[in-house]
Image 1 (cartoon, rainbow, N blue to C red):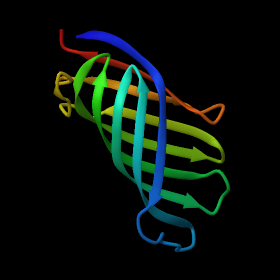
Image 2: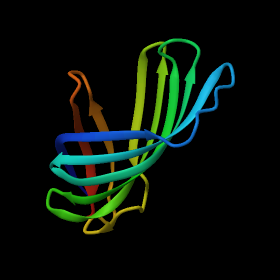
Image 3: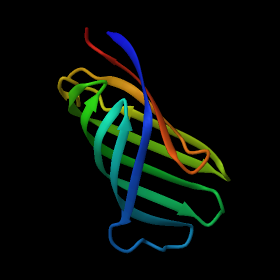
Image 4: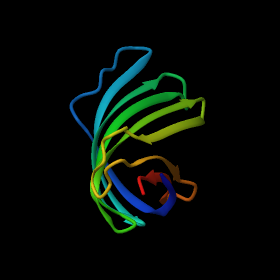
Length: 133
């Protein structure tokens, strides 16, 4: 397997899907994800996110599954990201990984980890990935 690094930006639109559960303690919600990737990864991402927002400011969690269709350093295909995010009173832990064996086309056998930098309000990514030779 050869290691690669992809960099770029993305735009995202999130839309609530139904009314959130407002039971005291944690509000549960569901969102749709629509992304446009630019840079070394060029294409679209579509997914579903489940959220839990607690009564404590800055504490929340989410999980999501997102299918990405496009090109990665010129290789065409699709794959799936799995997201897991936790905010503990403002401290963020985020894990976004390629679901094993989800790659298709020229991205068959893809594995990797996707990182997001959102420091200035723009969504930037670094995608460390590997593909079979």
